[in-house]
Image (cartoon, rainbow, N blue to C red; front, side, top):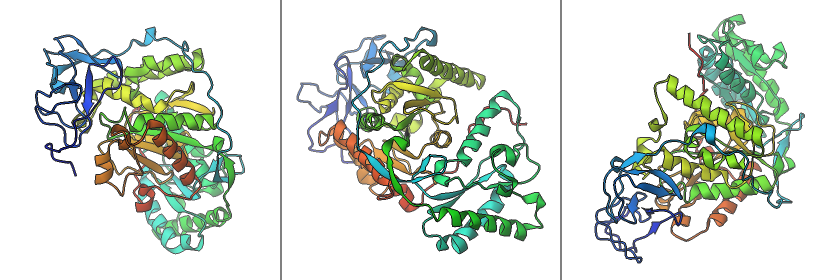
Length: 511
């Protein structure tokens, strides 16, 4: 619960950079008019928790600076101590993509972090899983009802016999038919389905359920598999036989998966995804910097780390392209930014559609401010590769995986890139989870952890109140990743069985 604004706690704000002329209010419930800070600042009006206060008089047209960067311009005179509301801010223009610096400030390699391991499932192809799951892929949405019925029976009647298998997951999606299957951008949903079907958590056991007349033919999903891995419902003698066939083929694979055993693996075998959702003004000063520190630890240990969300990178891309490991990586990042600019323009939209109403309630004024806080997740490592939506990661280190900012679409695409586990920071709160991969939730503020104690796995709000450092919370996240990857601990989302559906990104036409 939020505390009353008349709390006796000393007024506290956070100023991120010496150049900043605004700060955010830390006190839960906000601060009332007349609240006085030790520096002499006095609030001229009530300012909610997480929202910005002017640290000096701002004349009309004067830059508003947070994170040491311009997030907008004063639309009118704003007095020192005033609440800087969205209506008072004129948004800054995005960086020009043709003028970005590339690879001119590549960080030096950090000292390697040796000796960190986890207990995972080594696959025949050399990849490693952190869960032992049977995934059953669909080639078209038409079969979802039948598959879900069959999976329910498998879980009730068969899975209990195979105690070493964690779950049976139907990989349902809304693609496969009524689509322009050969359109240039159809490769995005197709490769997403293909890569998810062979996720390392599935142990190499492939099973595809199709209808029989769809455009996305089942043998296109797993071209290296045999027809023995495919169930075509139109070839079955009625509903009962459809279900029985799926159950029999599932049990064959469960017998094999049940033989998998955990073995000690280096952290360099991990692929970790990062995402923020339900963000607030604390995201960029608590949870995201802590996750960025954990990201650097993972990179130092040789792991693959994915950060994403194009629209929440676009306005801060000028701070990232200098970190590109080489010219090709920098140009690839710019290419993805341009593609998304064009994609939004085709839809008669632009970046101002982000942030969400909830983000704004949490103190984020515009997408520029949101982007500057979002990229804190990337830490300080060189960016070694750029992945187009749904592409599989192939390089160790920090990767930019281009995805929309939508939580479930981003999560689906990161799964296709090979993500074993996702760390998800949130200020407003979300019960989001994935059945294929654990999702660690990191709260940006103490009041969210108090409110949702049985949904948040890590509390970074202690950074804002001075109870912990960014480095300490970063190590906490890093160690929790290893424990969850090893099966020693579980996330709250997995504990409760909270799992979102896959959500494919399909920019190609639907016919």
